[in-house]
Length: 194
Image 1 (cartoon, rainbow, N blue to C red):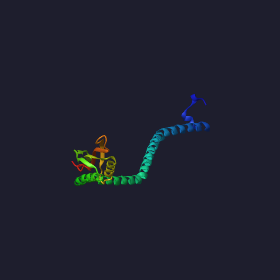
Image 2 (spheres, rainbow, N blue to C red):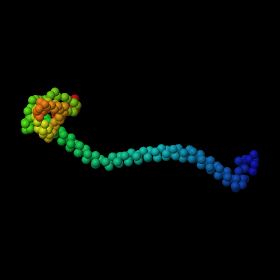
Image 3 (cartoon, helix red, strand yellow):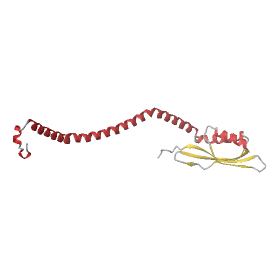
Image 4 (cartoon, helix red, strand yellow):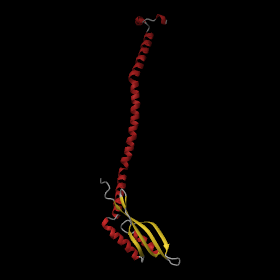
């Protein structure tokens, strides 16, 4: 068959092979058009949904890990809260400052130390705590001063030693003059108040 002789109105008279080929070609064109208009946009949407599914799966895994760790974190939080409460109980309140000063003095007397000076310094306030400095000057033997520092560390209230200075009373003497600035802290009750 010559293509120049091609006419559509003679289609019923074509051979079965030619009609089948034309019908197959027409079906392929229709199938390609159908795919282009219907399936291809759905394919792009499918890829987007696969990406979204992957992101949601990662989020789910992350959330599952967090949920699995939650009991352990709750135990840690409870432990930290207990430690925090214990530390807060070690901070003296205002009415305990006199007894704390007396305990610091008493521990020195027990170690046969002679106090030259023991008094409160200027208080410093921060957002959470008030820092209460305690200036201490005393004389005594090296070992007794060591026992004194150990006894202060064992007090039920927090007392920290800083800026310690040691000096012999004289070149021949084994007696030391000990000057230290100790600190204790109080919870600042103005935290969170306007």
